[in-house]
Length: 223
Image (tube, rainbow, N blue to C red; front, side):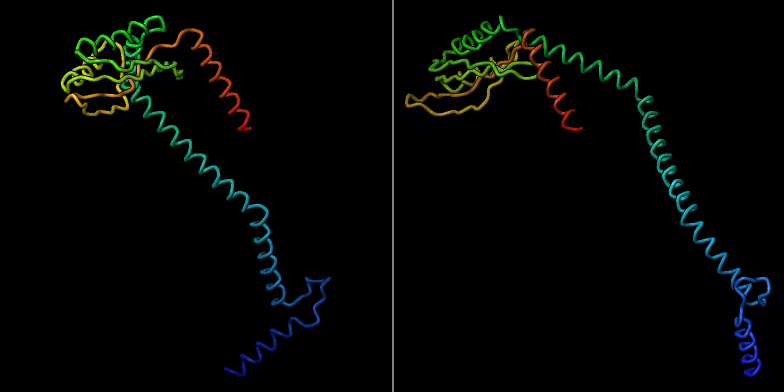
């Protein structure tokens, strides 16, 4: 068996000697088979490099796009299924906003609101040592009017005053409360009574202009 292997190997090697590259049809079988295998391998490699690789990349891209469209479709279907509930929520929010807007006085009604806060303290027997409204702070949808105040009285009178302010028909919140005992056995309270009012037409126009300018600046910066 060893002798046959050596003879076959020598015969196979001999087939590759003296090949005429310009006349491959005259080659023995072994070189032609090897050349055919190498040519097929080169064709497959080049085909993968210049054709199939791009096709597979395109296929992956289309699969990803299909998955994205599928998720968007499922999201839209869920929104449609919840459309009635979303409409009801929108209606409830609009009603709450309308209720809050009715609780906001306009600029002309602010003096009456501040007077109500003062009268609430006087009615409880409190002594006002400070009652100083500050300038309005304009917010996107309303204005804040802080009122620095300091009152003295008995503990339950101070507590009832805070309860009365919270019960006003207009929105007033007590902030930054500081309580201290007085020498007379009573209590003093310093706080900021934050009142709120609706914006007048000029203020609303200024807010819309400022919002539009900010949006334009943001859009310009994103380019």
